[in-house]
Image (cartoon, rainbow, N blue to C red):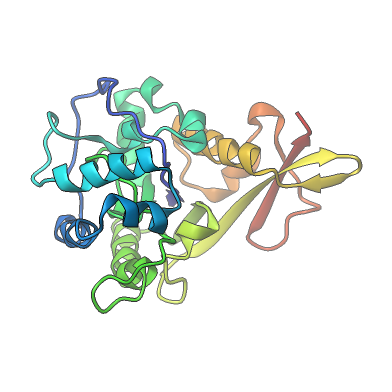
Length: 257
């Protein structure tokens, strides 16, 4: 079983990693190719493309120009420890044991606009490049075209190694679209998280993001490889709602917080 999640815009490269374990990215050449394309843009062009402030434009202009292979623990950080958004707040990777990190390394994948797909311990350098960026790269009209076959083949290879054919989709729509479902050799289960308010259930983005992280941590802590065991997820007031769940869209609900 493999779980896929989205990356975060917020990054933490100041806090020291709590593990010496690390691995290398799968698509270093491809990432370098994308960086070369992004270096052609001025800070102003980056700002317009990414819809970000001048300060962030300058920051990411500098990041692209300082980005350099090979990565090592002195110039890069493990992906799971570097990302710092709501999903990762739910995972709380800094509190994982080495055994937990090892399980995550085998079963968790982070989709990325720059790196394609990352294992938790893969070293990365700081960047910002969302999968939905409206820009062509070489003969590819966007990053979906650039990454789709590569990411899908990578996931298929990992699933084959495990002898399993289940993928738990805890990624956003923007990132999950980078996977070619027709070529993916797996059953896809997509958990959804909804809040009960005024008699109806609604998905509220900020809570859903945190819940994806909480479920990821639940899987790691309980060494879950059988998707049926996900239905026992009961963290932060959520429970599996059989009535709202349909097919492989599994709905987890709670009272509005």
